[in-house]
Length: 138
Length: 116
Image (cartoon, rainbow over all chains, first blue to last red; front, side):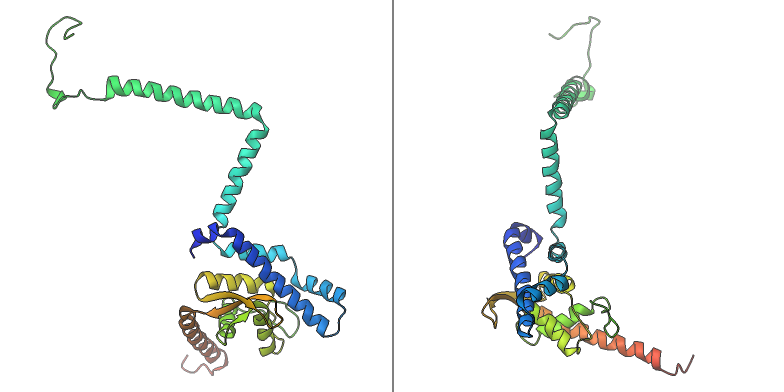
């Protein structure tokens, strides 16, 4: 399974990770109980020995090599949420960008047609205009 | 690794080696790996979950280990790890490297340093 596969089966991996650590935790508690410690105390001790279970999970997640994409997606989602929350900022920004890009594209299309593109003939550099009138060739 | 008077930290990379060695003895789950390492080292080495599981998962992603869910000795389902053939080769090579390295280091640390 490559990193893409691991990204797509993220939910299963998360469930497995949780199950695996829980098994370790429960086994450790069971061993303590077997050695004569009362269960509530055994759980407390095991929790202390374990440290932060979320921390361990986080270390394991880093090994999957999909963290960069996951945090990127989180950032994108966060951005969209923030934009939706402040329409007073979002709408003018979007309009400005839309108008800016639209106007630039329109002008460029014009310049491209009139000034940049050569005439649709085989050798446009050998084309000559003959005569002294401003309008010809209509 | 927990560090108290008679326990010590593992040098970088040796945890992978210890894990693979223990796994090479047959399918085994994470909890038993930690226990086995602790037992064999007579409690001098304690592998913390925070280093064990990331290492196991890294080895699995590198295809040195494979894993399977099956009932453990207590009846609960556990994730059992096994060496792949790639892992077996890797363990052999790394063990040889380790032996050579430690031999050389002790040669220098304990030798008489003749010929300098």
